[in-house]
Length: 286
Image (cartoon, rainbow, N blue to C red):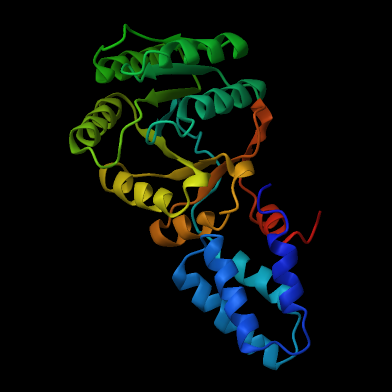
């Protein structure tokens, strides 16, 4: 992880017997650099200062505060209760939507689910081929049309086939779209409505590149205005020092992070575990 050393440095400051004003400034700066966000940074530092007057274990208190910030009443597990469970992948260009979908599909197949892919990204030339490669690897059928076809028609055909074919899960890839382009965002709304007419949507997963930091939060806010986002897939988490974006996204939107991308392998897209995350961030359980 690129934030290796961040937690150790922070813990060394908090371990001082007499923490001075400049030390608190360093703690604040480090939390902000990790993209935890101004609100939670201020709250965490205030709690730490209060605990310092009581000679408490400040590293333990910091871990507690981070865990508190990660609390959510929403489930971090995929909702697979419907049959078929319809899962739509959304996000901007280049964040790893298709790859994440391929990995989730492979994991579901390995756990015994019958999965169908829908290649509704009809704009990017390589998108269909990429998804078909994932399908071949995992034995997953892919519904696809020619480049430039209407994405809504792909969605309609895929969800209809999933219902008729007794599939457990249908995963729909969508075109990467800039959150600043209203026409593309409107099209996403149309795709969602078409799917809803055929079967209830179980999940809309927003895929965000962890390395973009606070820009990811901006993306999440705009997408949440167009689609009822149920969870976040945070990719490239192994390549960033900005792990605190997990907290910022959850606190701002109330949407849980459900998966973290920590490597290239199929099993390196892992369910989000708050305890593991805090241990990694603070380097307290290496």
